[in-house]
Length: 315
Image 1 (spheres, rainbow, N blue to C red):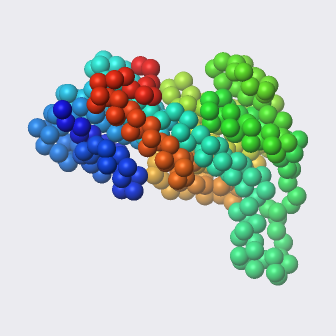
Image 2 (cartoon, helix red, strand yellow):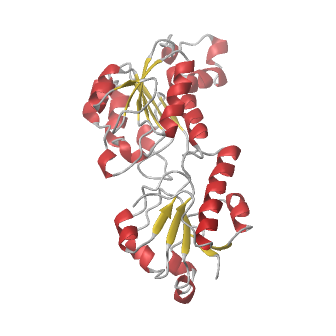
Image 3 (cartoon, rainbow, N blue to C red):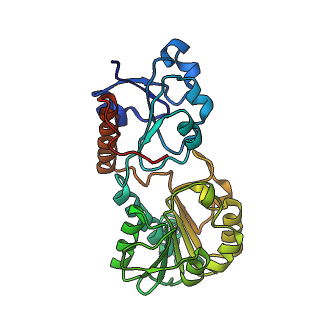
């Protein structure tokens, strides 16, 4: 039986090379499938590969009446209409924890850059301000990580690795998640309680309807003028308009962002000296991609061998 896989999202060619050695890829290059392949080709597709954050609804699934499985490259699957997949008997797989270390590393990079005001410091040197002895109002002595209170919102694999890394910097760590975990960090049953307690808040929660704009204007006020927010989860968790306002008027001190409500984007409202921006590269390391590709190949291999997916997502 055919081992063709429709590639729904746009991926750099390099990331598909290993997968393409194992399966026959029908690459849409990010274009709508109906514009890329004729109905008779789509009618034979049984497996689909996608980036989990890209919207994929029932109408797209219906273009492929024989579709049986959707495999996500990466951990997230928030773009998938889970109810639509379940109603059509489609299974879902992902790459759990494959990029957790890489994302945690970037979270700490953003946090340190925001805490130590790396972007203003870089610009101060490059512009000649340091050499000229010019005033540097944004480079007053900041609070460091040692002894800081750092809250982690979400204690999955990424959240755990962030917490461990922050502990190595001698920060005091606590967390909030839907349930208590067996970890050596204080648990806050309420997100607001965690925000009231911490100075630094790192978002590592899975995106979904229940977490949309969980960080709103009210919680940003509770984080306070010393507060720093880092988001490496999904942009939908933070009310971006409220965040921009809070950063401009000093409600919070700074932010480090790898994810945004709309991607790709140029978030002009966040083009501020107290914000560090990266283009959703948290999991973008060679070892993380290797691990994610391993999971994709394992899932697709199991599917085409009529076995349960290696890394299934419960629907």
